[in-house]
Length: 465
Ligand code: GAP
Image 1 (cartoon, protein in one colour):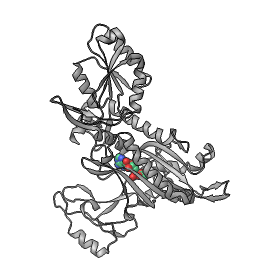
Image 2 (tube, rainbow, N blue to C red; image 1 turned 90 degrees about the vertical axis):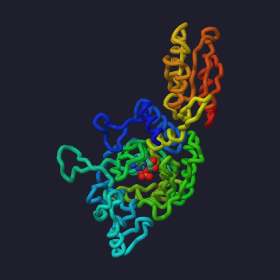
Image 3 (cartoon, protein in one colour; image 1 turned 90 degrees about the horizontal axis):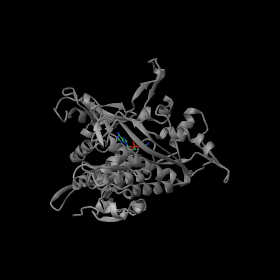
Image 4 (tube, rainbow, N blue to C red; image 1 turned 45 degrees about the vertical axis):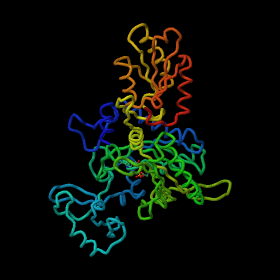
């Protein structure tokens, strides 16, 4: 993980935010390569979830919503973690992470390991034995800490103007359910997808961009007839699991884990996580939940608006059930990088390669003039400009050809094109494949077709050399 973090900083994928002021805890900025990679992750998600389907449409709802949205959704009452503070070293911990019993949102005492209800006397006795895991200082009693960030709308700081930064993008989809029904002529089963920033005042952020307080989500709410909930839940679990390996993540590092009943969020009747085996252990990459009719019913009740659907064919009215695949864009970007990272040796030379899928890699093709003379820089520039329309390209003329290959390997560029002496005679270039290290000679006029074919047929190949 340290090597990945260092590569990300050195090569311009991810920098610590506000670094010149000493940084801001767990806030990160995406640099020139990171921003391209993240854009590719978003595009790949959007294509799979919206463009390549005819049963899902897109949305981009506001980050600030009416405060009552979060009352209806249950976030004001339930979206909290139990925390304790050390009275000596002032460190803050999640109670259940350090074996401290805690109270649920409705006041019941719960066991830190199992989440099962406990008698208050038993919980208090257990509490009395717990000291800070860092300095053994006394801990405060656990209290619930709401994870939503608050801010104020307009100039007046009063309760009426208090709003929240959204902790998930999903609610903007539920509140627009009827708008989309009426304007898009879609009917269940159909979905509404959106990508956008969400904010949570996480108690224990960390592991680089894995858990941060400001992050991007790709969420899709799929509305189905109530009887079809389980069928679609199963469909989306499989579909989303397959998406990550389609974009190059090794299947041996992925698993689909079904939640136990006591793990389920307040709104869901079933949930499966796509998990990845990070260097710090298995972690959630995406959650697929069966949210039933919870959200639409809550919003119907709180807003007084009818959020049901009338099926003209069967002449029945119902509140659709919702299946939700909810992915993290930053977390997916991190996973693609971590999973792609490989250190090998080729002919006794150390080599660092990111085996990124060509559709995820920040640069698709780098073009090199072998030397800075004999018309090669001009020819390379001409080729690079031609390819720009269809691929993310760069041109690089400095350093030895070996160094230039090494630099591109390290940022995951799948293809390098070299203009050499022969190019000037027969208009062919070498096309080098990052993973197989095979170099083909290709006519410049056929480069686009050659790249298209290689991208289409790409399969991950590791450890060559
Ligand atoms: N609407 C459902 C929902 O938000 P979630 O499991 O809390 O479900 C979905 O979040 C995904 O969003 C997670 O699987 C993860 O990829 C990403 N995510 C959640 N919290 C995050 C955080 N603090 N930092 C980075 N990504 C986060």
